[in-house]
Amino acid sequence: MISKLQKPLGSGFGQKTEPNEILENINLSNKTIIITGGYSGIGLETTKSLKSCGARVIVPAKRVEVAIERLEGIIPKEDIIKMDLEDLDSVQQFTDSFKEENIPLDILINNAGIMLSLIHISEPTRPY
Image (tube, rainbow, N blue to C red; front, side, top):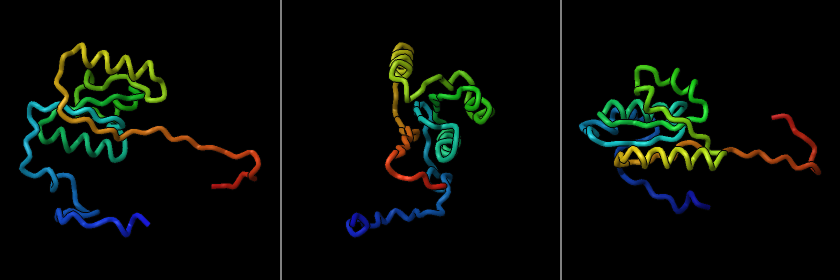
């Protein structure tokens, strides 16, 4: 089992560590970070923390209106850009647009994901 192969890193951080503790004394001024899913859950907390360290955080968003609302006062509206991970043309448009801006990318955090639920027709449906 994989848990037998895992070893503690000895970082001093654990499951109750707050982002501000991890990023203490870290200056991310002049750094550009893209965070997919940066407007909800762990991604939102990551966006807040990295922004508080001076980084420019760009958030690609499938639901731009929701992202703008949740990120109000955290990052500028122009750093929330339409992108839908389920649509490769949308991803291509985002990356082309980013390259055209000629902005150096320092950190990419792939926080968002696509969830696919498969229902087997041969199995009875169970309530979850």
